[in-house]
Amino acid sequence: MSLRVLNGFKFSSLKTPVHRLDPRAKFLLVIGIIVPSLLFTNIYMLAGLLIVQVPLLMVGRVTKRWLQSLRAGVLLSALIFVVNFFTGPLVNAVALTLRFLLLMTTFSFFFMTTSPDDLGLAIDKVGFIRWLSRRWLGYPNALSFTFTTAVRLVPTMAVDAQTVVDAQRSRGLELDKGNLLKRVRNYIPILIPLLLIAIRRSLELAEALEARGFPGKEGRTSLFELRFKPVDYLLLGISLAGIVLSFWVFFHYRVPTI
Amino acid sequence: MALSSVDLKIDSGDFLAIMGENGAGKTTLAKQLNGLLKPRLGRVTVDGHDTTKKSVAQLSRKVGIVFQNPDHLLFSETVREEVGFALKNFGFEPGVVVKQVERTLESLDLAHYADTSPFLLSGGERKRVALAAVLAWEPDYLILDEPTIGQDYQQKERLRNFILQLNSQGKAVVMVTHDVEFVAECNPKVVLMSKGQIVAQGRADEVLSDDGLIEKASLVKPQMAKLFSQLAGFGFPRDVVDVHRAKMLLAEKLSEVRVRVAQSS
Ligand SMILES: Nc1ncnc2c1ncn2[C@@H]1O[C@H](COP(=O)(O)OP(=O)(O)OP(=O)(O)O)[C@@H](O)[C@H]1O
Ligand SMILES: [Mg+2]
Image (cartoon, rainbow over all chains, first blue to last red; front, top):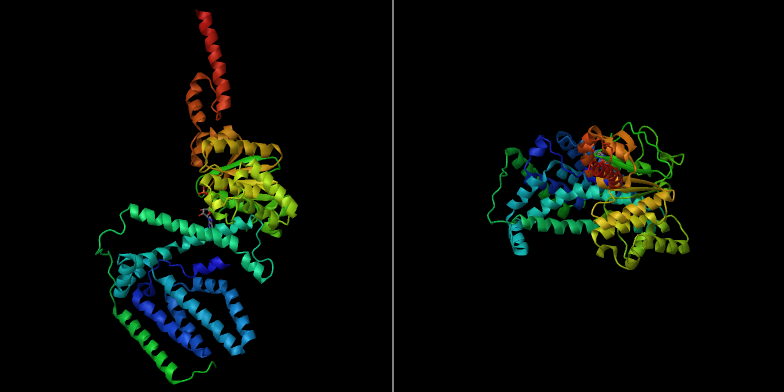
């Protein structure tokens, strides 16, 4: 089950208005949704923020995969619900579960409709990141490159994870057997090979990059340039307004859970 | 659908090589055999039990699969623990675990690495540990995915002898491989797959010397088969794939020639 969740975060190359939005504006929209959902626990508001995204998912033609990832995340939301149900009032449990689903939806929406390449370009535009990248790694594009590479490796890692699970199950490992502690420990034979594969792959990737002259000269240009369109400015305005409004309300009022 | 029209029966004591192009469905077929994948249509049975009614753990007790890449399964601190892992999962007695582990390490020439971390071993050695980790519980059916990759010549020879020995003890051995020379030397029954279907089954020398089948499964003929298809004009049979039989045939011909030369002089 856990692997199907990843499908809901994988980019699919479609040509829809949602895919064409500027990644920076889209990212601000994500922040504009996350800020209020973390500041407040009001059920109506959380539900509203969730529902608002449905048309976007539909326009982006990723509704089906979003639903699949939600279904795969049902176990975790059930866990969140149960834990909070026993430690507080019911509305709280509902609100926190809703918050989890909302966050998952928002990130899922963003990653499903934003190509890693665009994201890399967007990150490269941020002066602070370039500065940080040069200070830490000696090369202004290093952080954005790291990020795009990481995103791009997710599907490969998912295949590896599936193979590791298959290999260990073939050795009699039963993941959902035993009490809670045992079940957590069952994952050790899965996690260690995965971790080692990831480390080994990153070392090999670094060598392969250096062998091809990476990072090259400074002042690298890119084939595509990001440019804000009117709709991006609109999105930007709405998101910023939402963020400011959220903070303003947060500091001036107490918003009830229900 | 990755597989269709696959009708295959594997008896205890069989020795099989599954061959075919990349993406032909070999690994998919292997995963059907211990229930990692269940058929959506059709039936897979192991010793009469439908795989949809048994857990992977139950089926694996009988059908041991050694995956292609050892990095996908090694995780323990020592080779000894690695090999014992499955035995504990299957609920063997502690005494039996120790005995089986020692025996398996011995037979695969790994005993001196028992207390070493598997991650410190070379690629070929790690592959042998992966094999040991499955052999230790003595499954009735052993499935090896690409067992010869990364093995030097000597290890391949050892592996061949080892497989033949297991097979002669009555274990069914199924190897998935692209290594035609290895198959030619082992001479198992060959199952040829292409595009998710079984396109041919037969003796290694028949299948591997058949031009049409070889091309269909994007294989290359073994060296001996190439040689003998060129020698067909001299009255040699075409279906020669292993060195042993080639030697017999050539020696026979040569001694005939020698006799004729002696007579004429
Ligand atoms: N988890 C999966 N989901 C969907 N399709 C898959 C999955 N795994 C493999 N396939 C597809 O099934 C087909 C058969 O794959 P399989 O791994 O069985 O090939 P193979 O014969 O083992 O190839 P190779 O020689 O490369 O190992 C391929 O087309 C592959 O893309
Ligand atoms: Mg394969």
